[in-house]
Length: 264
Length: 293
Ligand SMILES: Nc1ncnc2c1ncn2[C@@H]1O[C@H](COP(=O)(O)OP(=O)(O)OP(=O)(O)O)[C@@H](O)[C@H]1O
Ligand SMILES: [Mg+2]
Image (tube, chains in turn blue, orange):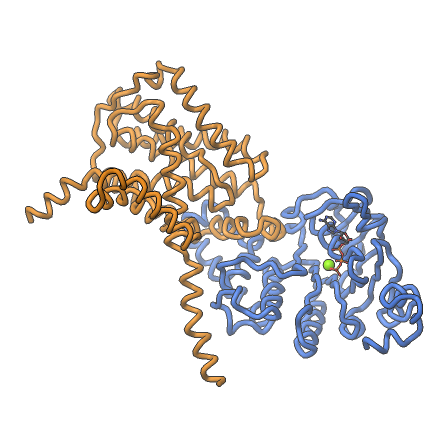
């Protein structure tokens, strides 16, 4: 079976900075893959390259076996990719429910004309989408705020709405860019458990995460990068112990197990 | 009763202008709501105006006059969109202004179609019930659009194009539809304007009307279709109201000051659904705080 995601020597430079440098890795289907690396390592750039907001200078990115390196974001979305953003990008002026309905755009199953004419089929479909959106908000624990203007919610709540919005598109691969930033340990663990439930339903997930405990508890495997390059990959506990990773995160002098204990 | 009919007689033309300006503002709004500030409605209105005027001169019936004006506006809007959508959105306002200047030169130099410098007389006064009917239909269409997937997509697109694209929204498709609607409504508005003035010339569709459209839209608010309608009514009525209170010399200054004040204190316009929702949310939140305390 082809992997859900494959990067082959993907490279992206911004002026003099090579943010992603000949990066190759594979995200297995039906697993939660962690993407780690210190600040500025190039993780968000990788996410942007996969989703088509940026394009590789060279190399190749394949989603579900399809080369998407030169595709536009909406084509990549239609192939089954959905994502969240490091600094939460909800739409101002919309309620939580409306955000998730908008996230279901690809599943509308209605032509623009039928939607404009409000045909019975179009109205029926819209009702079904609203129900599904409410269900998704329920899954992330936000159903009680469905009709609340999303921008008035707390940061952690907004992150959860954003995950529900991404799920609205019924993706095959979900990219989460620091989904637990700004959350307390209980909320973070909740997100971890959600990723496991989604994975068990068949979704593949690539998750940028700084919280080592979360990575160890919930990622099936991890990829660690630094300065745009891959420095380790494999089982979470082993990767975190890897001297290269210790050095990247904590500097040279502490590349023993102390670093891990300090954050674990 | 006499008083009422007097009132109607004196304000009839103001009401008619407010309605035509509503059409122009709606045409400007639909493109603005898809992320572009553009003056191109002037061009669509010019096409609708001259096409409509020519057909009226030939004695064609009103349904066909409006139909042809809508079709002409649509056609030109798709041509304009094909060029404009290649531009960076920052440059579109300027490019559309350039287009307004070009349109004037073209209309001046095509006297066979436009009457050139002499303009074109329109031998038919627009019946009020027709104007009302056209505006009501247009507003209904905008209501339907607001609740359609086009409406959903354009709201997201305007706030965050990258997020919209990642959701699967084909930005170019939505923007093309927006321009098409703008063209249809602008064309219809142009024909209505021609019959309201009963005389049009290249100067009719120039900078003055461009300013009116943008001012009415921004004043009323561009986050809901009701905004441009309210904006057009206020913008049309404001000078009339000022007339009653101020000496002639101060009127224009006062108009400008009122517009500036509204834009400073209500930058999102008079009709802002987000502000309404925030206000509705505020007492609820206050209630929760009290219970906790
Ligand atoms: N649009 C851009 N233009 C120029 N430089 C950029 C751009 N985006 C990222 N960079 C640079 O590329 C490098 C990688 O940035 P990136 O945001 O991918 O890192 P990151 O691993 O996500 O970091 P963090 O943990 O802080 O989110 C950084 O040096 C950053 O300054
Ligand atoms: Mg980042």
